[in-house]
Amino acid sequence: MSGLPIRLQQVADQIPTGASVLDVGCSDGRLLAWLRDMRQVDGRGIEIDAERVAAAVARGLSVVQGDATHDLAAFPGGSVDYAVLSETLQAMEAPHKVLAELVRIGRRAVVAFPNFGFWRVRAHLALHGRMPVTRSLPVSWYESENIHFCTIADFKALATEMGLTIEREAYLSGDQRVSSWPNLRADHALFVLSK
View 1 (tube, rainbow, N blue to C red):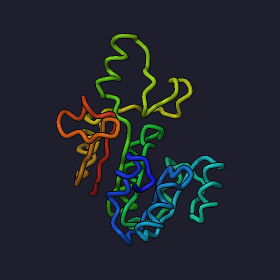
View 2 (cartoon, one colour):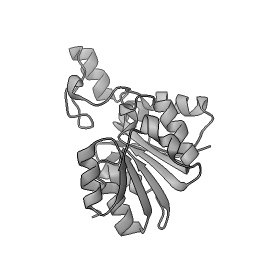
View 3 (cartoon, rainbow, N blue to C red):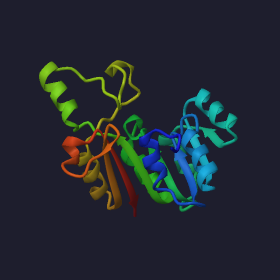
């Protein structure tokens, strides 16, 4: 067992041994620490929350405090093999701008996010008329850091509009992989992108 939750393991599985990584919105550095220890990755992180930055630095990681929407422009283009944005896209002030920065900084971008097209989310809205509390988003709408909800179909359309190549995609419902009808059946999505 890897010690990572399946959603983070799914991201980690996209990163080869020895790669260089920038983890955007890296939280407490759990993913970066695993990649460093298990894949000998040269990793860096950026995180907006000072307490999470301190926790990541305490793990021996190179993490700076910053706001991805505004601070990614300071990173040189093509400076890492993989730019990672895991469970953070929906919290970005300008997701399309952050996505453009990811594919500029990294040769590839790994993006993972909760799918708001998931059938349980749709059913809850239809039956109750209120935003659901789900496994992916375990707090009420007013407690959430999320400001841009999207579906898998929305994300694919944005990638196409931006001229990005989707190299790989993977979907989960809970801890199970989903292969058919992901926009309806998956509560979580992962994409590997390039220019």
